[in-house]
Image (cartoon, rainbow, N blue to C red; front, side, top):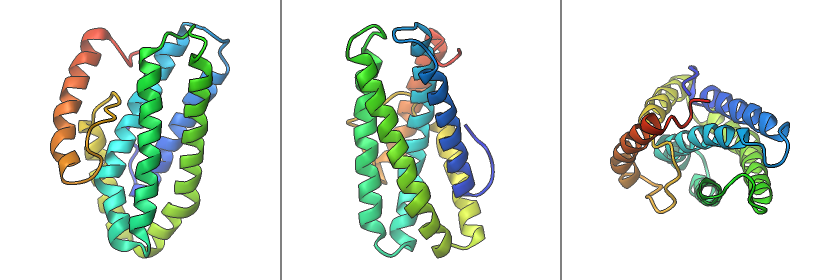
Amino acid sequence: MGHGGNVIEELMADHREVGQLFSRIEALPTGDISLRGLLDEVTIELVRHSVAEEQYLYPAVRQHVEGGDALADKEIAEHAGIEKLMKKLEKMRVDDEEFHPTLQKLMDGVEAHVGDEEGQLFPRLQQACTPDELDELGDKVRRAKAMAPTRPHPSAPDTPPANKLLAPGAGLVDRVRDFVTGRGKS
């Protein structure tokens, strides 16, 4: 969850972590009950990551990167689609005939999003910001991930200031639910 380093290093470490979870998922046979626990882990990481990006990364992109508004809007729209897929999967049984096609859409969407960020957004942000600014953003992202929700909330606001006000409360509720149910402790 918190890896250290500047914002780009932090978020790229998250990308690698989710990629490793996807590899574990792909190694399992269709309908394997272990899929639920791994999908819960992926969802927790993706939701925390997305919330932190929406709170701090994308506002910084808007502020520092030429054409940043359009770039941030595109990334937020991708998050919305990914979040809807996670919500759909959350309600499905692993043996549902639509589970694997939906899971594949999620993995493909995340892979494309990661490619966009690492290939376009991160290099542009790194050119536009000082090392100190990137370090400060990394600290803010780590703090946001620690307080973020762990479940998809597709109708929640995805831009400041509303997302910064509501996410910690939703995060607290989600973490209590996770504790009670044991979710994310595979």
